[in-house]
Length: 266
Length: 93
Image (cartoon, rainbow over all chains, first blue to last red; front, side, top):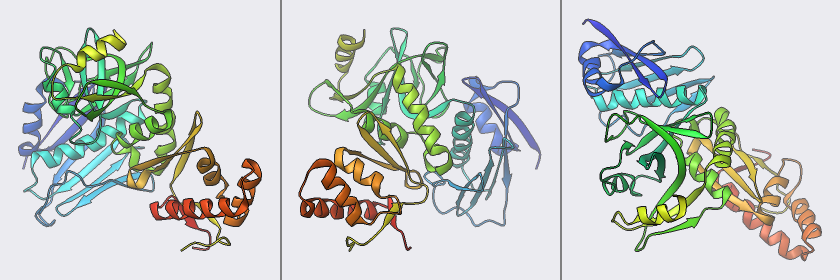
């Protein structure tokens, strides 16, 4: 089977994906707007029929860190990421689906981002009046709902955004992980971090600093599973919290929360 | 069940960081965290693999001017909770 490769760029970080055409082509199609140069971290996808057929989604497999390498394994999948060599390799059964492969790519990207000074953050990034509002929380907290309730506003992602330090503060960048709206908007300065809480009214509530750190670490995928990077992760979030406010946003299933945010932050 | 002669230390991989007047304790391998404040944070920091829980209670009792019996009960309860959550381990384990 012929191998092909394609490089994708997200927020100035690039990652080169190689493997059988049948596996790479769906990425090239779905992530057409992310095609970039030059090559960055190498991610090699290899079909391995000796592995058992997958009997469950790869998504959700928790990474393990051993000897500075990240391992991601479940039936039908054996993934190894070597951050020092900037290289990753996934052996997977031919029945693996694009979503499974994308999960591995996402895992690699989370490590790459962190090691290059950025951060992949489990949040919906919505741009309002030129600034990005990062709505975060566990699955089901309302990230996608908040995006849907913000018609006309660019959505950088409704699930995972990239944070990168800028000249003044931090920028929120779009990623191919999750749904995006208004593709020509790639990034915006981070205005505030909002922990979503579904409620019967719209209101903001201050979040104690310690709880904020814990919540933010909990929403930093992959890196938060690495004991070696955990301390640096806390420090990085402390730095971000020095430049932007963080609050609980209690909200109903309506777009009225933007009025509350405007009153506080505009 | 813990007793006052037990010695606890931070479990492998667990990290903590002070932030303002709180202590954030992160269990990276489980992706979990919790926040301690006041005496809880002080007690946690004293579980250093050297002091027994009795010693921890004594230090806190002196520091906060609280009857020793009450401090011992509070320290035992906190230590058990931390042990159940995997944040600390028994020193002889």
